[in-house]
Amino acid sequence: MKFTTSIPLIVLMIGLAKPSYAMDSDNNTLKSTSVDYILKNRAKFKDQIALLPEGIKEIIQSKQIKLDQQLLDATSTGNINKVKEALSQGADSNAEDKNKGNSTPLLLAAGYDDSDIVKLLLENNALIDKQNKFGITPLASAAHNNSLKSVALLLQNGAQPNIKDDEGCTALQHAIRFDARYDIIKNLLDHQAEYNTITSESSDCPQPIDLAIINKNTQVLETLLALPDIKININHLRELARRITNSKTRRAIEMLINKKALEFQRAGLAALGALSGTVASNNPPLPKEIVGVIADYAGYKPRK
Image 1: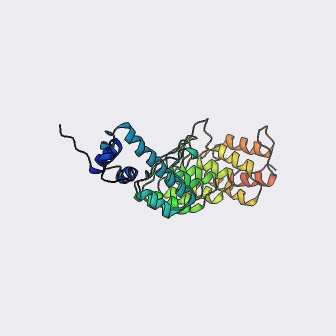
Image 2: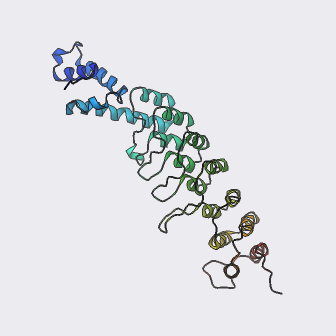
C-alpha cells in the first residue's frame, strides 16, 4: 500500500520530532510556517491530518481555535478586514461561539445586519442554515433583529424560511413577533414562508396571524388575510377584540369580519356577548362602540 503525504506535513513532523533535521535554524518558525500552510489548506489535507501523531494534531488544533476566535471576534465587532484576514489564514467559517449559544459567524453577522460580512462568509463556504444551540438559523436571527439587507441576501442564496427553533418559531414568526420591517415580512412570504404554522400547545410561539393580532400590526394582518388559504377562527377575533382600544386596531377587526370569522352563528353571537360583557367570559368587556363595529361587520343587528 503506497502512503503519500504532503511536503508541509513531512516538514512539520520532522521539525517536531527531530529539530536537528530541520533546514531552518529556528524550529519554532519551521513549525509555525508548516501549521499555517496546513490550516490555509485544511480541506485539502483533511485525510492526511487525521494520520498525524496526536502531539502534532494538538498543535494544529490549538492554532485553529485561535483563528476561529479571531474570526468570531471580528464578526461581532463588524471588522470586515479582520474577518478577511482570519479567513485567509484558515479560520473556519462555520466556527461556533460557545459564549453566544454556539452561534456561527454567519448567524452573528446576519443579526448585526453586516451584509458585506454575510456575503463574504457565504463566499467562504459558511453553512447558510446552520442552527445554534437554541435552533436559531442565520435567517431567523436576521428576521428577529430587523436586518433587512441580510434577510434579503440570505433568501437570495437559498436560506430556508421554515426551519423551526427550539420554541417552534420560524423566521416569519420571529419577524412578526419582534415588529420587523414590513419589507422583511413580505420578503419571507414571497419566499414561501409558512403562514399557517401550527405549533404545539407547549410552544411559546403563536401562529403568525396571532402575532400580528397581538402586536396590532394591521399592515401585516391585512397581508395575511389577503392570502387565499389563510386559516382563522373565532379565537383570533376574540383575542384581537380583547386588545382593541383605538380606531386603528378596529380596522383589524373589520378585516377579520370580512373573512367570515363570524359565519358560525352561535359562536359569533357568543363571542359578541362575551366581548360586550353580557355573557360570562374571561375576557374583559370592550367598549360598546367597538362591539358595535364587530356586530355591524358581522351582519348582526342590535335588538330594538
